[in-house]
Image (cartoon, rainbow, N blue to C red; front, side, top):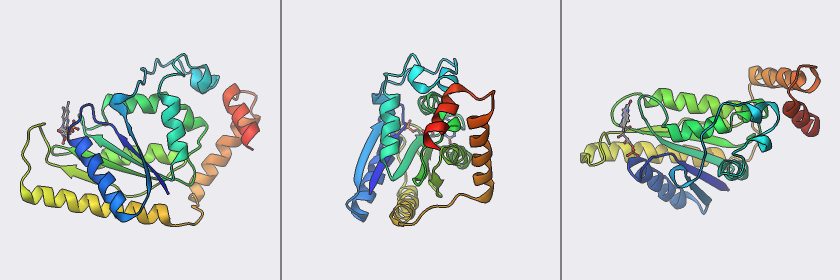
Length: 226
Ligand SMILES: Cc1cc2nc3c(=O)[nH]c(=O)nc-3n(C[C@H](O)[C@H](O)[C@H](O)COP(=O)(O)O)c2cc1C
């Protein structure tokens, strides 16, 4: 099975440490093929809000040749995606939000079906639960099946010393989350969307394929994919 870990930390801090631990736990569970993308090491130019990717296709974006296409192909390659992100002001940091904006055309043309997604938030004190909900909602729109993630708490400042009890609690939460993820990825069975999601998808697809107002890129995508 192929696993992609996305490290969204702005520096090699607590988020990196958590991504390292996740990688170690994964390797101890099974011989997975693990790939890691560290967003701060990639060139992801800022979304300019021109909506060309939505209207005319992502290949028409002036920034198409930066790392975004490569990251998307890694997401398409993986059976499971773990997004590890710090909590910055109750949200994901700009580097991950910018990636999501650059990939926003996937809301119109979803393509991550049959993949498991899990989010892990690294934070000081408060707010991680809502960030997990946000990432899960986005990844569900993009086609993934999302499972319960984990919030790792306590690393408020880069030089914070965590007590043994907090370290133990975080390790336990992380291990349980990764084990849940491993079980979900290993289950070889078709994953069915809810009736609501299926209806939403069918209605959107029909509109994008047949409506005279449909965007060129959407019409082409659904005409090709059916
Ligand atoms: C700009 C900024 C905003 C933050 N906002 C929050 C917050 O809203 N809630 C929280 O619990 N921690 C917050 N924190 C603390 C970080 O989530 C925490 O230090 C985390 O471990 C940082 O991960 P990193 O070392 O990979 O950057 C914030 C930190 C920074 C630098």
